[in-house]
Length: 193
Ligand code: FNR
Image (cartoon, rainbow, N blue to C red; front, side):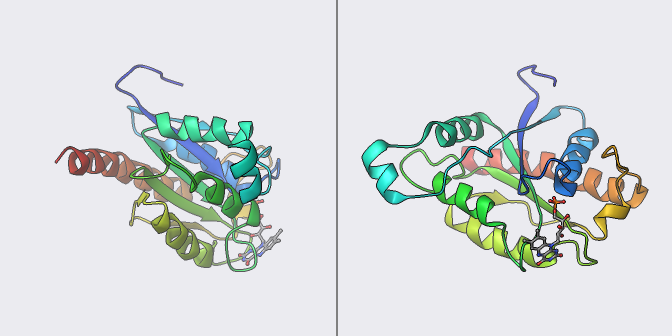
């Protein structure tokens, strides 16, 4: 990863915890396709516990959640690649966002976010994206509107080693990452103004 100070530091969150996740492959493709000057680090978050307001009140933010809050707070943007589970968000991803949404110094507030989804079905997760956008509204994230990326029949678009084998998918993802770089610049300008 290029860590020079003028490189945009992007955190990748995969909505699937599966080792062979197609969304994990999509996220890695996003990292490969980013324009020069952007770098992606996919972060691991499987240790995040179930949200419980009693735990938050009595014991504070659990260490695995605090680590993710701090990492996102430092980042210039977040890319979320998620499957659709039963027409909506995977429970664990919603649970993570619930943890991020509590307390002061909310890491997602005014954070530029790009979302994509990969699914084995033909719609590529069309329904989850709109639910995810709705949830991200509450945390004041600045979600890129277009171009959208839905990777349908995703199992046919990646090799068993996780490489993208579909040129159209690569181009869609590259176009979104280029737009995301511009969106981050616009978001900064809005905040400065
Ligand atoms: C799915 N899948 C699925 N696909 C879809 O297009 N719409 C849906 O509503 C669902 N629902 C659903 C629920 C649950 C619990 C599972 C496990 C799966 C299929 C899904 O697209 C497929 O399993 C993907 O491969 C999951 O993404 P990852 O884990 O490969 O990133």
